[in-house]
Length: 398
Image (cartoon, rainbow, N blue to C red; front, top):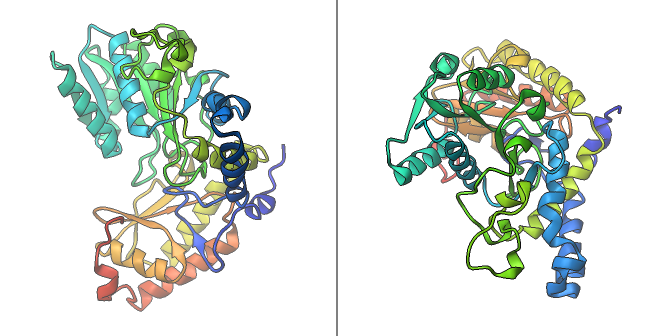
């Protein structure tokens, strides 16, 4: 397949004059998403009413869309299911992994992990008691910390601040050699770079779809369970739709078959409709092409910023293979600089304490966008245009 990124760019509904470098936080809207959701509302919900669960296939959506996601993350069919939030899926995966490794009590993660993953692990350990604990180490120390006390590793492949990338294959193999299970968070990987869950022999994986996969705010999460665990994993959150026969209304829980048991809440039908509109675009491209072009775009951006903005310090790995699809720079006034950029039509985001973060994907970003963004950033830095009170007042969402 040859990826035509000019064609995919035309399929996104971006405001005129905006250079959007924040798809790593919230992807832009596919042009067909509004019509797809409107059809679901008017033709399905509006006309089919409750019969839409059968006639429109709403009940089957989490597994059907899960198979489309599986293609992008190197997973087998019928191993991914959609629904709920990423935090819920982290909790599910952790609880299941700990139960599969009952003689150990340590969850190992790193200090570069997204805080909510750590919050879920801490909360689960408090609930379980009995010596369960979360251990965190510096990202570069993960390999050395995997030993025969670890029950499960909880690792986000791509660091949310810097874009630094863990070696999934190596760390998974090391964990297995030491008798530990693995959970990989793909929040900044899915849709950004090739992922090979089956090839890497990963036990569990979780991820979200509102970033590079463009499902919109509140888009559903997903969970992957390796086939070898699918029939023995016990979901800690025993949801109605994860029951083997939900409409038998049994008083006692019986887990559904395979990945179906990891379903919890009602399928988010409208969000899944929006996601399917985005996945139609993904059907047009090869993830390897996305990765190669993303690296080239980021390299171009990094070189331009370093040439024109000497007070910004690169916080991301310089080697494209060692990072995800983002570039980050440090500056003590990072928040104000980002607000000045947004006011000029270049949208990235800020991560405390001092990170300016920019996300890249060739699906809707091209070299001309990169060059314009560099010129605007250089102007802001050269003239200290960020040094205004209105740019230093923190909003609720940064």
